[in-house]
Amino acid sequence: MKRWLWMAVTVASMVCGTAAAVPAGGVGDTATQIVTLAGDHRLVVLGEYHGTAETPLLVADLMERYSRDNASVRLGLELPMSENAALARYLRSNGDADAREALRTSPFWRVKDGQHDGRRSRDMLAFIETLRVLRAQGRDIAVAGYDIEISAYDSDVDRDAEMATHVRQQFNALPSAARMLVLTGNVHAMLHPFEDAPPEMKHRTMAAFLLDLPLYSVRVEALRGHTWHCMSPCRAMPLLERPARDPVAETDPDRSYDVWVYLPELSVGTLTDR
Image (tube, rainbow, N blue to C red; front, side, top):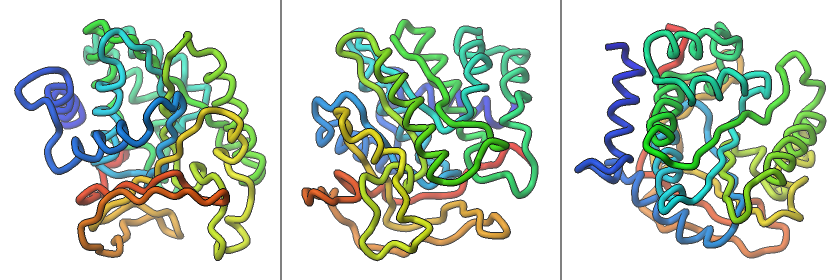
């Protein structure tokens, strides 16, 4: 069995009603914190470090929780919208080898070297398989990308504005009372820039374009571990180690996020390019 499929089966068993109903390693605790703190907000934006093994597990747990009792949940991923047809086909499939190969070889997943910014990992493919399993069990789940093509990146401002437009369109198309989760890089999830942010991070971010919506922005951090960074070259970088801490909610009008949550640890996932 290929590694990413083995991971998918493992994750699915953790979030789909088997004995291991809550993922190990504190992911389940963090998911509980997010559900509690986000409350009735219908648009929950999760600001992540790309390329970790734990964040897909966290979002899988959230999708399972939010889709209980016939609730409708939609997920936005930082993938080009041109991938949406392939995503939809896979989610409707039986997840067999042909379906997996079709998804794995679509343009987004076939990048090499410096383009490997962490969004393309076997952990993310396993996560998509978990969502397919949930749908097959009758959950009202749908997934779509909201990003633009890499070749269309003009500037960070233009890209964030375009992504916000796509997220807004997807949110406005939600069924009545449905909830939408959006997984994105932690800069895109910022409501306002940090006061001491460098000039290149002072632009209006995706979340800042959506402040009129019932949005709740979550910064997903960790107490220790490694994340994937693309800073010539792309590589694993250590996180600053912190003592255990509770979520930190922000209330200032110019806050960067609504809350910071802390996983016990983050580790770099397995990139799709061997």
